[in-house]
Structures are given as C-alpha cells and as structure tokens.
Amino acid sequence: MLLSVLNKRMPYYLNFHYRKKANLHDHVLTVGSGRSNISYRTSVKNAKSLAFVELYFDSSREDDYEEFTKMEQTIRQKVHPQIQFKNRRIGVYFQPLETYEETFEKIAEIFEQFIQFFSPYTYGREEIRIVDKKAGDKIIVDLMFFPEQMYPEEPYESEDSYRIKMEELSEMMCRH
Image (tube, rainbow, N blue to C red; front, side, top):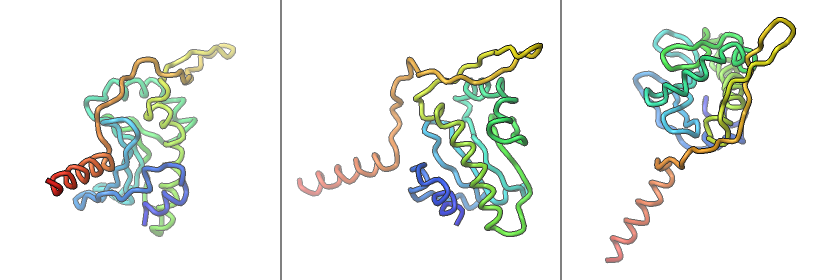
C-alpha cells in the first residue's frame, strides 16, 4: 500500500515501479537512491514505533555522509525542518498519524522532498560542494551543484540487468 502511494505521488521516480522485497523483521521499505551503498529507507512504524523517511549511508560512504552533515542548516530549510543527522542516516522521524493512509501521505510528502533534494547527488550527475555567501554580517552556507568530473561508472548491476543476464545464460545453456 505504501509503495503504491509513493508511486502515485512520484511517478517520475522509477525505483517505485519495481517490486520491493520486504524485510519481515523490521518492516522497512528500502529503495535505491541511484548510488551504490546509499539508499532511501522508510517505514510506517519502526522498532521505536515511529514512522520515518531516511537516507542511509553504508560505512563505505561515510565521507559522503560527512559532506552532507556540514550543510545541516541548508538541508533543514530545503528538505524538512525536523531532519536529523545520526549514525550515517539523514532522516525525519515522527509519530504515525491516526490512520495508515494519513501516515502514507505524510511519508510520501517527506520522501518527495528527499528525492528532489538528494537525487542530483545520488544519481551522480552532480557533485555537491559548499559555498559561503555573505549576507550583511552573516555567512550563509549554501549548496551549489557542479557537474561531476571524475566519477567512474560503478560496476554494480541492477536487479533487472542481472535477471536479463541470467535468462540469456539459461537460454544459451538450454540450446546446447
């Protein structure tokens, strides 16, 4: 149900169009972010009875996580005022609303903000850098996006490319 609400709200985000494997132990929906070892995670009710949307960074992406923590104030303004940064997770956590449908809608609203803000980075088309601007007496730290210069293509296959490769191998083995 949650996946269909996300798909309906953000039909342009193709990762919602594929079936997702559910983890029965923690009821967390994990969706690829476009970059290996960084993923979106969401749940209507986690082990602490909170609903959440988060961007999770594997330990191999700790440097990327640290870059985002330097821009906490800007991310709060552009994504969500109650966003939290902790344990390689950037997330919004809240008490579930009265009905599942209301909670699904709130998750979808927050998720959309995450995708719009973080996708230029996670899909590797742009590199994030911090730029200081002076506004009167204050220094404002803001994000600027620059075309990414030197990210080599990552060798990880998608579920679909792996499935297609296995089907082709199976067909080839059956012919011989």
